[in-house]
Image 1: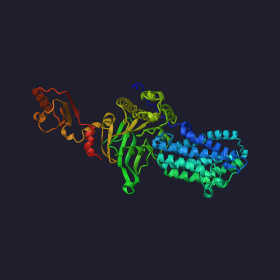
Image 2 (image 1 turned 120 degrees about the horizontal axis):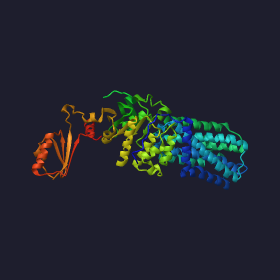
Image 3 (image 1 turned 180 degrees about the horizontal axis):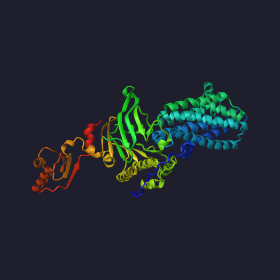
Image 4 (image 1 turned 180 degrees about the vertical axis):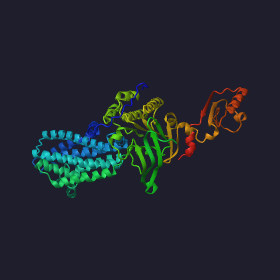
Length: 258
Length: 321
């Protein structure tokens, strides 16, 4: 430390442009997510294990031509849940605890920019997940319907929006330790029984009726429809939209910044 | 009292309720009730008060972090509750709990924050000035309290703000860091920045502030320059203010025999004396004459004026709440 260097107070020039602020925050959040070991396990390792597990076991036999075609869309849906709900929810919960959200919302970034940055980070990590899972699935013999890609990716983004809204709602209303517990528990429960990787037909009767209305089931089933048959089922789109709008509005209403 | 000349912040009758709280049977708690203040450009304005007095809440309402219940706030001509990125770019904030992501490293973090501004201050100058280069390879999680404070100050300054809010800026600082941080704050004031800080340490206010608002239970209880406040309640005494004389000498001396009983004489430890009250030159003459007569030479001798802490305790009461 020296006393010599003057810190000049030159005339003020204002904030950086909005898009630049949001993209900067998006890049920063993406790098933070990718550098976090636990997040990587959740975002990449667990979905890869699910993919390989479902491909080498007979769990999905009888539902289609081959196992990997049925497994991969569900695993992509699982990726969206890992990143948007559990990963991003936990990160936001702890950012809230440490005052990071409050500090950043006093900078030109603001609250809107902060949320926009998180959404960019979720999408960026999701792109990486699709590339990794898609490549491994291709090696395992995945042959998606070419016309399934466009609706499939659209649904994946919609699913990520729903899970981001849910993750922010949890992270913004309960303590970070509770966010950690809730989002991890729901990841396991919805992952196993939510119709996400295991299609509704293979679930217990009770679960079968419910999963179509859950974001996990709606995303998993609709992605299988898209990549297996190349079609989009509107009811699932509506379910996902509802799971985006309602928790999103609740998060806007009840999110506590400190 | 003074009237505003070029205020950067004006708060008028601020009211802030929090809750409902279960501990109050679901009622709201009023943490700020009718507080008013203003802060000038090129000055350091201090909010001084005990923990829980409402200082941080007041600051957070001014920063737009908390929505006020009532009253008016004008920050650089805008209402912080509705202001956008333009106002935020002109205001630097150092929060009490830092608000730095634990996994970040200092320099990439500062560079990231600097990117939010059109024309931030040169990073190297701030890094060197606040000694951040000495811990640039350590993650925020592992920084000491003082290092975190210096980094938080850098983060608040990087956008070259016109107004700087500092919530308890000296918390956790070692004496060297404190010196560096205080010098920088004073220099920024001299460069024309309007600085508003909170502190519960009288010494901070005494060393830094041009104008002090003493806050208690969410209200203004006194205000003025440090000099004004130090003479509080003593204007009638022809400039004589209370002082305390401290000295170390042989234990068990009967000081009252030398100077009489009108002052408060205490021997806190054996041989460690304090004489407090309205000390006059006559008192000092009597005491030193008595020492000469008895052949006593004190090992140490210190005369102190009334401190801001005394003023604060006089005003807000000596009870611990």
